Image (cartoon, rainbow, N blue to C red; front, side, top):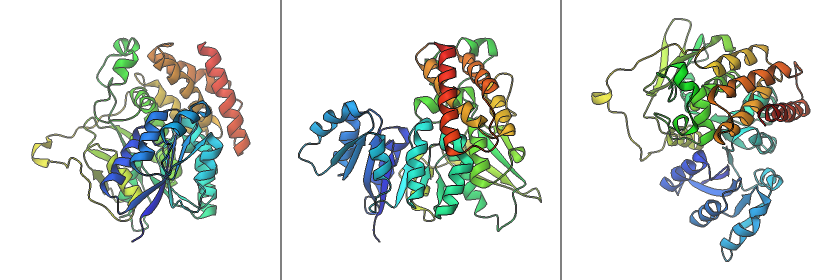
Amino acid sequence: MQPKRIAILGSTGSIGRQTLDVVRQHPDRFQVEVITAGSNAALLAEQARAFDVPHAVICNTTKYDQVRDILAGTRTEVHAGIDAACDLVTGENVDIVVASMVGFSGLRPTLAAIRAGKDIALANKETLVAAGSIVMAEAQRCGVKILPVDSEHSAIFQCLQAAGGNPVARIHLTASGGPFRTWPREQIEKAGKDQALRHPNWNMGAKITIDSATMMNKGFEVIEAKWLFDVEPERIHVVVHPESVIHSMVEFADGAVLAQLGCPDMREPIQLALSYPERLSLNNRKLDFSTLGALTFFEPDLEKFPCLKLAFEAIGRGGNLPCALNAANEAAVAAYLEDKIGFYDIAAVAADTIACTEFVAEPSLDDIFATNEEAFARARKQIW
Ligand code: MG
C-alpha cells in the first residue's frame, strides 16, 4: 500500500506535534510532504529534518533565513509566508491536509486545500465557527471528506457509523468543565493565566486551553457539530463530564444512546482521521475498566461560564455573528495570555463586540473576512 501523503498546517503546535507522533508510529503508512509553522523556526527545521519533509513553510517571513540556514544541505525546500502554505497544500503530492493552525488564520489554507480536492483532517474548529456554511458547501462541491480531529466530533462521527441512516434525535457533547469547574465565581474572577492553563485532562495548546477554561471552546464545538453533522443547535446538549472518558454521545428517536470512550489522548482521533476507515495500533494508554470508577455528569453553569451562553446566542442568531464572536475571543484570549485583562473580561469583550457587529444573515467569504477584521479591531480597541 502506498503511504498516505500528508500536509500539516501548524506542525509545531500541539496537534501538529501529536500528528507527527502518529506518523512516527506508522512510518510505512504515512509520509509527510508539507509542514507549516507560524514562527517556531527551530522546531519546524527539526521536524523537517527528522521526517525528511520535502517542503517546510515558515509563515513569519522574518524567520525564513533562520530555517533555511538550519536546513542547508538537506533535501527540504524552505518557503516563507501564508501564501506559500496555501499553495503547497494544493500540490499533487498531497492526499490529506491536517488543518491544525490556531484560530481564523486556518481558514484560507483550509479552503485552498478543499478547493484542490484534498481531504481534510480538521482540528482547526475556528474555520467552521467563522465560515461553516461556506466551508461545508465547498467541501460538498469539491467532493472532499472533512474528518474531525476534535475528540468530541470524532466520537460523534464514530457513533454515527452505526446510525444506519436514522436521523439523530440529540447529540450529547461532553465537556470536562476545565480547571475552574468547581471554583466559586469570585475565585475564578481573579484567576490568572497560569491557573487557566492547567487543564485537568487534556494536553493542548495555550489558546484552546484558555477556551476550555472559559468554556468558549464548548460553544465553538456546538457550532462545529452543527456544521459537520447538519444537526440544529437545539438538538445539541452540552453535558459536563469531568472524567473525559466518554468523548461524546449520539441519541436516536427510540432513546438509545451510543457513546465513544477512551483515554483522553488526541493521538487517537488524529490517527482515525488519517487512516479512516482503518484503525491502526497506537502506543497510548488504554482504558482500564477495573480501576475506572464512577463516571459523572452535570449541567453546565452558564452564570459561571458566560462565554458558553454567548456562543449559544451567536449560534441562535447565526449569520456572521459566530465569526465576530470568534474574532473577539481571539483578541481577548491573546490579551488575557499577556495579563492585560482579567478572566471575565474575555466574555465582556466578546459580548460587546457581538452587540456592535452589523448583522449579515448570509455572509459571503468577503463578508466573513470583513467581519473578522472589524470585530478583531473593535475588541483590541476595547482592550488597549
Ligand atoms: Mg474538543
